[in-house]
Image (cartoon, helix red, strand yellow):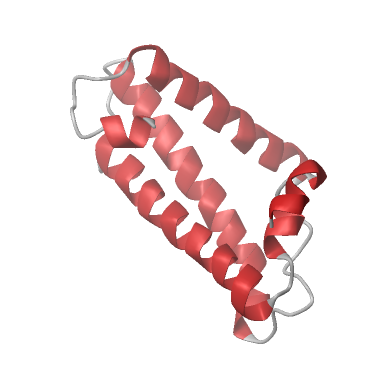
Amino acid sequence: MYLLLSVDDQIFGVLGWAFVVSGGSLCLLWLCFGLLNKGPGPALDGVLRTAHPWLSRGMYVLLAWAVVALAAGALERPLPGPEARTALLVLGAAALFHAIFHLWRHTALRDGALRRIIPAKFHKYL
């Protein structure tokens, strides 16, 4: 939601800090415990199977970049390099491609990718 509101540079507030705290928490979990996914899945092979864990790490790096840039901008201590809005837009684009990739895996490869991602109580809707 914050990504949609980031078009306006003046918006931050509670929603921005919620993004910083939740995104920072996810990054800390990644740093402490590593990747928390169950791996690439049995139907994924070749280059995509090799790239899967590295693309997951890339998503965490983009999230950390967006969190740090957003927090620094909110504290009026902007970092050198792209501003927070750019980081959020890059993160949003990567998340969109990430979601499309998992939908493709679930439908084309039929490897149950969405069943591996979402809680078991929602499996009946897939």
